[in-house]
Image (cartoon, protein in one colour):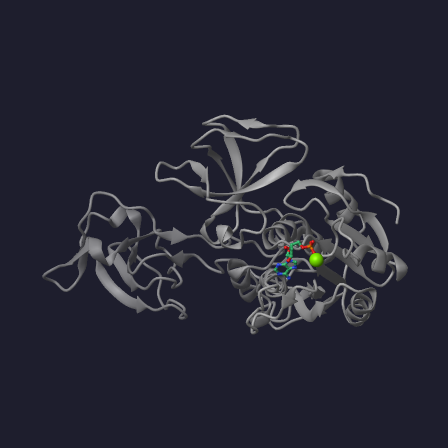
Length: 398
Ligand code: AMP
Ligand code: MG
C-alpha cells in the first residue's frame, strides 16, 4: 500500500477530482428532471414574450390620450388576438398576458381607472409606467439559455418547459454503494447490546447520496474481517460507479479496508488528509470502481461526504459543484492547540447576524449537526480566529 503521508485537503480534492470519469447520458421526462445535470445546450426556439404583452389588467391606449375620456372598443383576453387597432381617444380593456393591440403604447391599471358617465373610462393617476413587456425582451429566438453541466433546479424546469424540452438529455445518476464496517455495529432496527452501537452512517450516507440526485444502494454492514469486507466490495463492484465505506480506515488492528481494496486491484491514491474531522479519508480506484474510505465517526462521515465526495459525484455527472456559502463575521474568537489540519466547525447564526459555534464535542457528536446551520473552516496552519473575523459559512440546511 503506497501512500501514507498526510496531504493538505486541497491537494486531496484535486487528486480525487482529477481522477473522475464522466458518466454517460440519457433522456428523462421533464417531471423527473429536477436535481439532474443537463448534458445538452438549451436554446430558445421562440421569443419571450412572443408579442408585446400587457403586464397588468387594465386599459391599453395611446399615452398621448391619458388625460382624455376614453371609449372602450373591445376586451382582449390572454390567448386571443386583438381585433382592432386603437385610435385617438380609444382604449381596449386588456388582461395580464394578453397581446397589445396596434396603436396602443401604454396600459394603465384597472386600479387607476374610473368609469365615466358616457360609459367610457378615464385614467385617474398622474403618470404611469407603460406596463408593456416588449416582444423578445427576456429571450430572443436562438439564445443559449442553459449549458451542459447545469444542475436542473425548480426554476430551470420552467425554462425547459417554456422551450419545449420535454425530454432533456441529462447525465446518468451516479450509482453509489454504501458499506458500513465494524464488528460493533447493528442495524438501526435492533436494540444494541452493551458493547454494540447502531450503525447510523449507512442511513446517513444513503440520504446524502439521494439528496444530491444520485442512486444509493445500501450493501450492509461488513464485519471487520477481510472475507466480509471482500464480499461487500464484490457486491459493490457489480452495478456501482462508486463505493463508500464508512469506518475501517484508521490505524487500528481491525482497520482492514485499505488492504482489502489494494488486494482487489483498487489502488490507493491517498489515505491521510490534513482535515479535521476526517484524517484517515482514503481514495482509491480501479478501471471498474471508485472508492472512498470515510472515517467511521458519523460527523466525520457527514463532513467528508459534504466537502469531498459530493463534489466528486457531481463531477462524474459533468457538474462543477459550488457549495452555497455566505460570508459572515465571527461572534467570538476561536483558538485551538494545533494548526496541523484544517478543521471544519459546525456553527449557527446569532440574532445580530454573526456566527458562533454550536455545542460540539467532536466527530462522534452526531446530534451537534442537527443544531448547526453551516460549517466554517479553521484554515490549515492557523490556531486563532479573531472575534469579528470574516469567515465563509458553508450552508448545510439548503
Ligand atoms: P473506525 O473508523 O472504524 O475506527 O470507527 C470510528 C468510530 O466510529 C468508532 O467509534 C465506531 O464505532 C464509529 N462508527 C463506525 N462505523 C459507524 C457507523 N456505521 N455508524 C455509527 N458509528 C460508526
Ligand atoms: Mg471500525
